[in-house]
Structures are given as structure tokens and as C-alpha cells.
Image (tube, rainbow, N blue to C red; front, side, top):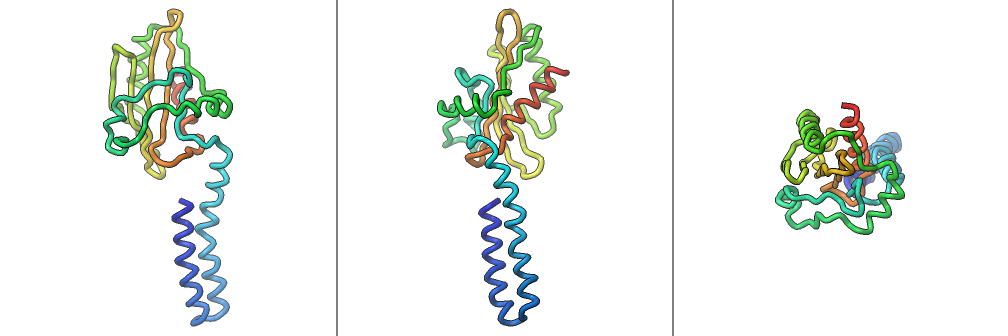
Length: 195
């Protein structure tokens, strides 16, 4: 967005230069304002992004993060390393302390089915891989505004007779996510807990 804003601003600046010569002072200020519009739009987005950790992959289990399987075969991910970056662990712990596994007082198989049912009704979410034996569900999320596609994986395991749900969400585009992955995880787990 910033690069696009800069290119548009540069193009309008060149136009203003020539318009100023031909049309005079009044038109100069009108075009100068138009040049500033892309910057005015992009600047709040940049400032907002700076509030969040500079990562694009978040998980509820930094020691043993859920692993992507189907996402490895998605065309945009063919040449990407889909392993969870080890140095992201401390950043997730410090920056997203509320991103935690969800423990539910029910059998893992029951929880797995509930998660699958919930995923199927999420707008913009598509399940790409389901393994009931390993307790993993994987898929893609398309964001509503910019249509970015992100990958997610959910793992259901047994812990002291209860179901433990871990989730990981990774952006395909950009080096930062403005908190989108952490928000996605928290929102989905909260929805699951209340369902």
C-alpha cells in the first residue's frame, strides 16, 4: 500500500509540475492536495502496523507448533519455508500473551468434529486438509477487504483426559501482519469455546 501510494504521489507530482506552468497558482493547490491523498490514506495504516510485533506467523504453541501439510502444496507456498521461525517464539510470548491453547472438557474426537463444523460456516475460510487420526485441520482464509489469503492449521490433542486445541495462522503476503494472525486465532478459539 505504501509503495502504491508513493507511485501515485510521484505521478501526480509530475502532473502538478506541468499543470502549474500551464494553469497557474489556484490549480497548483488543488493538485497538491490530490498528491497528498495517497499519503493521508496510507500513513494511518503504517502507524497502525508499527503497534504490532514484526512477525507474520503466530501459534498457541511456540515449543511444538502445529505443522502445515496441505499448505506446502499450495502454489504460492511452493518455494516458501513453512516451518515456524524459532526466533518468533519469544516475540509471540511477549507480544501476544493472550494467544494460548484452548482446553475443553470433552473427548478430542468430539472437539475435532465441532471444530470442523465451525470451520465450514466461517465466511472466507476453506478446509484444505482434514486428518481425524492425527487430529489436524488445515485451510486457507481470504480476508474480506484486500483479499489476502492466509494459511491456518488446527491441532486437537489429548491432555489429561481433555481436549487441547492449538492453532497456527501464517500470512502469505508481507513480513508483518498488523496483528491479524493473533486476532484470527483468538477470535476463532473464543467462538469455539462459546459454541
